[in-house]
Length: 390
Image (cartoon, rainbow, N blue to C red; front, side):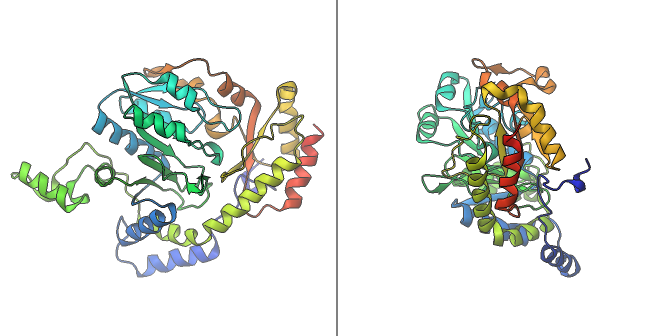
């Protein structure tokens, strides 16, 4: 079925006519189109909304993954990074491509997230960081994980690409870790078409994120860091002094203009998505589907659908119902399920700590459907009734 034929796509067109007009006006009257004043404006708005000191806008959430791991390696040296098997490919690909070793630990079936118990068991003297993915918008953070990172001097990275506005104890996810990452891809809570941010509270990490974003050039960083490098390397042109082996992952002004406009409706969209999740879980048959997902603090970009153990052989029938009803879905949930099964990983050193039984279960017995603000209560209830007859 072609994407435009779905009656319930993963995401409706979330770029409005007003967004298009503002972009067109900017194109007609602006003189700068790359990483400039609008990017800085969006970074400030995002930081204030999230409750962090600094944000660095980049060209994708995946780029934010790569920069975060580059920062870990720069500060901590080579070693191991604890990662989840349920997430996006760049959560692991960034680790292996940058010469670090991913240590994959299992998730909870309750929320698809890695647990403090599994993290604790996987920590070794080689461990440098923990990547915590708030999968599908279910908060993964808790006090025990925060304490584990502090006790073992580990950098805690929150991947919030699917969880804009999710909270823990009333505070937004992405404001707990040392580094947090967000994606503004077309299908997420807001879109800049492609785009993302790296968020930090520490000034040193802020400088490092800006360096890695733009070739490692010191002119991107603070005045203090620029002066330090001028004193250490007086024979280098300060405009072209490269402190780290960086990337070119800058955003454009166009992405930022769109992001600024989308921020105006982010909170109301999150409220709608939250209502949708409650309606979804309240109306699914709990003898067939998992319905005990945590709703407190969740901000879900998609609606999870996972078979209970006794009915897991019915997943094909569920898919048939969704296809008949014109509902777009993705098997295995985020990233297609268990990343430890993917062929790319076989080419790189990695370690699986324990058994990934839960990740395998999600891989074979779960999927998600779109959760966009335009869904109606009636639409959700009617689909639940169809599914309950599987």
